[in-house]
Image (cartoon, rainbow over all chains, first blue to last red):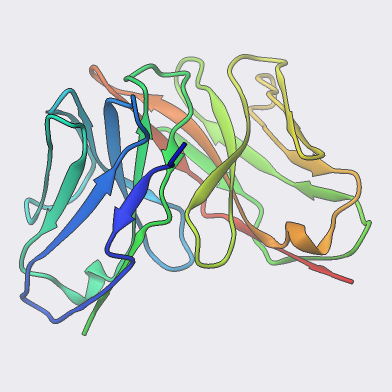
Length: 114
Length: 114
C-alpha cells in the first residue's frame, strides 16, 4: 500500500511569493495534519483537517492556510513568503481523529526561500 | 503547555554499543508517547509507541517504557548498528478542543561508527 505522498519534493521561492504544497494521505485515512520542521528542530504543528474541515490550528500567522478535498487529499498554502519559512513541510495522516492513533508521515517538501 | 525534552546530541557510539536516549515530558492528563526516527532526506517513521503508564513499546530491537512517576520515556537498544544512524524524536499526543496533535522534542542525532 502506498504511504503518504507529498509533492513537490523540493521547491525554491523568493520572498513575497506564494506557494502551494500537496499531500495525499494513506488510502482510507480521513485525517491530515501539516507540520513545519525547521533545520535542527522538531516538527511544529500547523493544521489538522478531518472530513474536509479544519479541526485544529497551531501558532502560525494567517499567511498559512490549508484545505482538504473530498478525496481527503490536502493542500497547504503559504502567502507572502519570508526567509524564515524555509523548512521541511511534513504531512501526516491517520484513519480518524483518535488520540491514540499514530500519525504516518510523508517524506516532506523542502521549501527554500531566497 | 505540554512539552517534550530530549537529551542533546549528537550521540556517538561504536557498533554493538548500548544506546540510551533520554526523554522527559510535561503534560496534563495522560498522553500517549511515541518515538519517531528520521533518516537523512526522509520524513518521520514511527519507531514505537506506548499509550498508558507502564506500557513498553518495542520495535527493531528498540524499547521504551512509559514511566508516569518520572514522566519519562527513554529509548534504549542493546546493540546498535551503523544503519541505526539517524535523528530520533520523542513525541506526545496533545489533545485540544476536538482535535489532537503531536508535540515533538528537538530530536537527538545518533551516529554509529563501524
